[in-house]
Amino acid sequence: MSASPRRPVPKHARVVIVGGGIIGCSVAYHLTKLGWNDVVLLEQGQLSCGTTWHAAGLVGQLRAQESMTKLIRYSTRLYSELEAETGLGTGWKQCGSLSVARTAERMTQIKRTAAVARAYGVDCQVISAREAGELWPVMRTDDLHGAVWLPGDGKANPTDLTQALARGARTRGR
Ligand SMILES: Cc1cc2nc3c(=O)[nH]c(=O)nc-3n(C[C@H](O)[C@H](O)[C@H](O)COP(=O)(O)OP(=O)(O)OC[C@H]3O[C@@H](n4cnc5c(N)ncnc54)[C@H](O)[C@@H]3O)c2cc1C
Image (cartoon, rainbow, N blue to C red; front, side, top):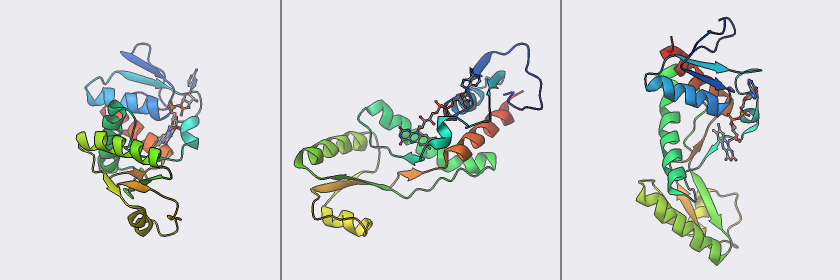
């Protein structure tokens, strides 16, 4: 991948990606991983200077659609390996996550989503309000119907992640 300000922009490329946020850098990373090393990424400012810079960095696998669940499951694996691959920290921390329900209807909905997540191999446990309180003691739990605990969820630093994906792409680029 060509993405360095020190290099002139090539006249030809197999793929030109416009925008160096998490999406553009991820596309460049994955294309080069597939062997497409003639990739140019154009960024008008600095890598991750757009919306990515503002993202909180929460990475949760409990999604309404199975395709999203599969995608985020893949992301958690990638984020845990990216630092070792690129030598750049990503801020990835597998701290787990709690999704809580304050109504019976919400409890039914998160149980359903949890069942779908489990079917796709995501470690996902339906727990009581008391157990949720033990995991996050500062939380009020007397108004909860229950919760879902995903130990594989985590957080990352979106800016660092973007830089790591860009370095992975550069390393495999021409
Ligand atoms: C770890 C992580 C967790 C996240 N969690 C959540 C979440 O829980 N909920 C949620 O809603 N979102 C989440 N997000 C997504 C986040 O909020 C943004 O939606 C996402 O980062 C946007 O990325 P992007 O690459 O599409 O856009 P941007 O980061 O905005 O990147 C676009 C880039 O294109 C450049 N650009 C634009 N026009 C041009 C041009 N003409 N020429 C050259 N460059 C141009 C801009 O300068 C910018 O850098 C998360 C993201 C990360 C990385």
